Length: 485
Image (cartoon, rainbow, N blue to C red; front, top):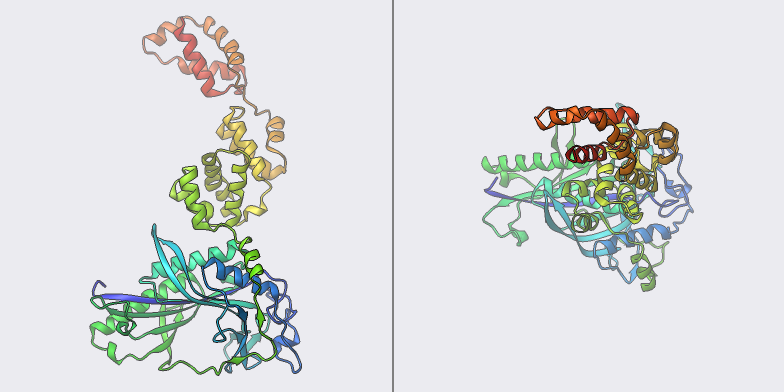
């Protein structure tokens, strides 16, 4: 492997799921298992239908463009990309390519890979309509037009990745941005994320800044999961190195391959000597329009703080571990929940401990979202405060947590109903401890000789208070009273 450098570029397609309607039609933009239920005549290319641009889709596309430090165009154009395929009923796709620039160009993204920060250059990001989806059966195929016209963002990177780890880390960072910005659910199980991967290898001693030194590029089309991206890249690297080592690499032509999940391999589809001529021209039914600079400034105010920045804040300002901070920022809803507890005065480490262990453990076990549980940030703060104040023990705190979820009541109400509240007042406990010690003065001498009678005194206090005395406070007072005698 050290003899070669791997050059990887990505094309990431992400559906904008957070709009009410599709990008050019009034059909509902929502995932639906029932085929052909979210369609309008425009989606199926019926004659006489005209596209109307969805302003919200443009707004969300601009938000991602700004977040990726791209340059936005002065005027927004749409174009027709002409090609024929069964799932493209019009015979063309409305997209952006050449006039004069798409929704964003020449940006960059800083992301983390294996604990190290990396930077990837963004060539462009453009807004287009998705095609319908085709399902191939044994003797026939079916087309579902629900996906036709769904707003789609295509992001094209420069070939800045050198391993499958880097490529997948970048994709995970982008998925997080889409979700944090409320642009997309970015759920690959719903087909909302798909990737094309370009892979080539070159001799390690050559200058990678010169594209002429790159090896023959292989494009792997429509990989539907990040694990698939990792496996496809790793397989393709191994395949190309074997061709190098057997002196067959020069015979390989530029080609398109597909990833087969069953065999975990890439399979030849077609050669790709030259770029396909899609005969782009400006969409005649959508006039160009000027993007108001004031609108850009307004959109900037809506961009949230993303995961990487939040993680750095949690580590630097809240002294959380890298592990805990990474878990907290993985889902925006969890991060928002955590930050709400901090605003309410909770100790960050206590809140993080509860979230990363008990709460997320419960959510993962039952496949729930944090939005699904009854315990609000304010309730968690109250629960932690009762533990910190010694009103209940940590063990009791967990019991209260599950009881809150079960009974849908406030933590304080559960504590009162269950009679859990501890006796934490020192004077109250001392009034109980002193008579017990006075009744067993003979044990003090035994204690001084090294006999363990301490547990006996603690047990007597717990028996008298029905287990409500705070254990640490009880132990402290017993020690003080013994040493007085």
